[in-house]
Length: 253
Image 1 (cartoon, helix red, strand yellow):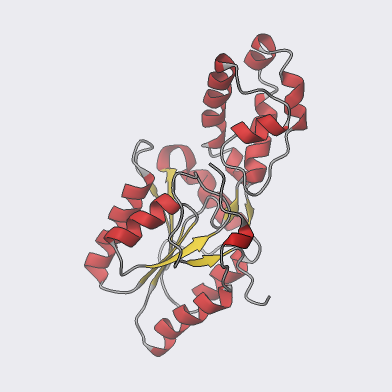
Image 2 (cartoon, helix red, strand yellow):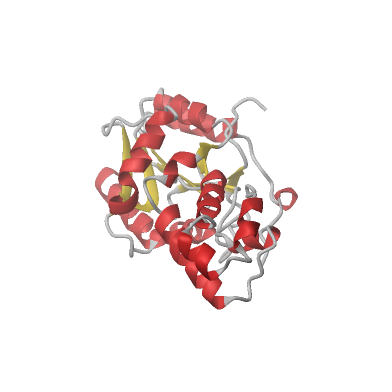
């Protein structure tokens, strides 16, 4: 299954959604909560994936078991729309019919990709830092609600947010990760948002790249304003046609 191409989706301007948030906060005094996912929403993880796969090719187990395949790992080049590693390896000339190779790469990929150390290769999407900083100036709460888990990725997530100058003060801007890696991302996010709405009774905006998460929230929490960031996703579902869609965060375009 291929992802819907950019030109088949109607993209909107970041200034439109910013204006709506600004009106709610400054004019209506509604104090909306602004939630951002991290991977493939604020941050392009393609550089992380490229570094992970390149390093996998250097692992002794790879060189011992697959000496004829390892040279292909030097040709790894990721793209914005990549999800996982299978298509990346295929482009580099690695055939996907070796089950043992796939299992070995997958295990190493899990260990490295979902780790504090490799998060540092993530790069913010165009305009994302300035956009979030502009939201911060409205004096509304910001939450980074991510499917990353505390044990493997909290330290690195904090460091990278601060490195790129995203607001993070644990008061008006907070980082929320899964307490357990085995928790389902969509259910975790739904439950956290539901609890917030129940306690606070204020508007909520969710910026998210994964249609599985968006569709669940749209179905069970229809009061949430959803913003689909069109970067890459699991391809398990497609986003609702009517959802507000962004491809970058530039306020002037």
